[in-house]
Length: 451
Image: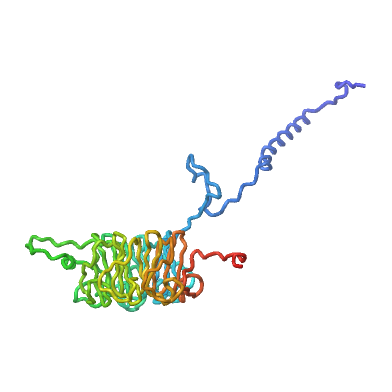
């Protein structure tokens, strides 16, 4: 039987309708608040490193948002390598200077005299570095020069600072520099205006005969009188009408072992100092207390203990001086007293104490000379009087007392020779007769590859 709805419905009070409506409204509001959180996917992990975070303010209009795989941290590269006595130094593109090896005389700027067998950060905001046997120079990005190490002949240029003889921490020496060169008990800097300043052993740097055998004051090496001495003699003119010639502008320099070289802006090589092995290349063994023009069309000059190499603008390599260990690579061991042509197609040259390194246009490294500790990297300790190709894809090379470093195109750093003072930075005092990769440290080969 069908019931009549009118007869079966009950009376609904207004109060009940009000409460029911209110419940519906509350349920709707709660659903709008919590439902999106229940259905939204979890956000991906974000690095806490500020350098890898991406914010709305950091994205320019129309620029694609980088994905996590596109975020790469800055990795500084090696831009300079340098060898000293029992020490190696590398300079990275972020201005950080690292060293491994001996800290004798505090030449690494470390107050503690103990050396290191691992790479240690010793400087920041550095543009270039020049180590020698007893002291080290570092050029900062602002043009100031730092020095550390032995100062017994005033080679750091700290006025009146012969005692104490050592600077075991970096000392600011001079400003407005563009290039630096440290030699045995002497230092040279090339200023931004093209002038060369020096301190230390006087015979190799210039100065009047009245000066002492060494100086602890930085001073310019060239005066008006020096200009007159290096210019060719001409017909006498009325001195009253002549104006004094300004000091020349220099582009390169090298501070050796009691002798020095300068390269003038016109490519002329000037030399001064000891010449007992013929290292000045002036066809005798007589030292010079005056700056002498020696060679022309020169781009770069480097020197060892008693020999010198120059790179001419045509890519040819020339040398002179001490050759008893074959460091000139001439096929014999007789000393040479004048510049002789050695190699062609060269892009860069370096010297150790008694060995020489040259990089050719194709990136091949050629080496010759003393090899008593395996610094040539040929697998023996036999000296060589012939240039030997030992490595390819090389962009930089450096020679120390009895070890060598090279930087390859792929950014790897290699070494050979004496490592008894930790100068390879591998955590131990190990020497080698062949080239080994020291940075980055090579990964161990799988066992299956060794079987």
